[in-house]
Structure formats: C-alpha cells, structure tokens
Image (cartoon, rainbow, N blue to C red; front, side, top):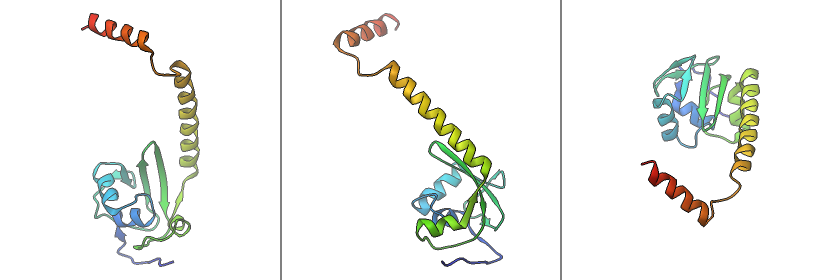
Length: 134
C-alpha cells in the first residue's frame, strides 16, 4: 500500500476519497463544503491538510462516523487497504448500531400502520377531507 508520511499532510477531499468514504473527490468536496465533515470538531475547507492523529466526524446518509486518522494516502486502493487509513471510535460504532436498530423498529412500526396503498374508497375520503380543509 502506498502510504505517505509527509509532514505537510494531504488535502481533506483527497484523503476522504482515498479512504473510500465518498465515491469521487467531487462528492467529498461537496460534503466538506456542505458541513457534513468536521476536522477536530470544527468545520473546515476542502484544502485543509489532514494530519495523522486528527479526528474526523463524517456524515453519510443516515450514518455519522467519528474516525481517527491513522495513515495518509493520496491513492485510492481496495477497501481493505483503505480501512487501514483510519480507525472508527468505539462510541461511534455503538451509536451508529443503536440508531440503525431504532430505524429498523420505526420502519416496522410505520409499515404496520400503512401496509398498502389506499383503495379507491379511501382515496375519495382523502380528497373530500382535503377539499373541506382548504
């Protein structure tokens, strides 16, 4: 694996791309600019240089991860090699698993309330209700 130990660091968007958090550097750039990535607890710019030992908070979709940077790389490699660039904190793993379990329970409960699409009679009732309340 091509891991560099340059003291100057590497651009944040490039590291996120190499660590396989985002599929393209463009998506990594948009995430950083949109405030979905925090470097040591603060918002940062795309050109921020990542240093070994830094803490990153990364939000992707429903999940939020807090990772510590272990190594630097400017090349995108396979997933096993990319996973060696960072270590997710234990608190982050447990919180993410708990939120996933909560979403699963809520999804099952929502499915029980509305198991199927409304039929013709129910649609008419919905339309009548909406027209009265407008």
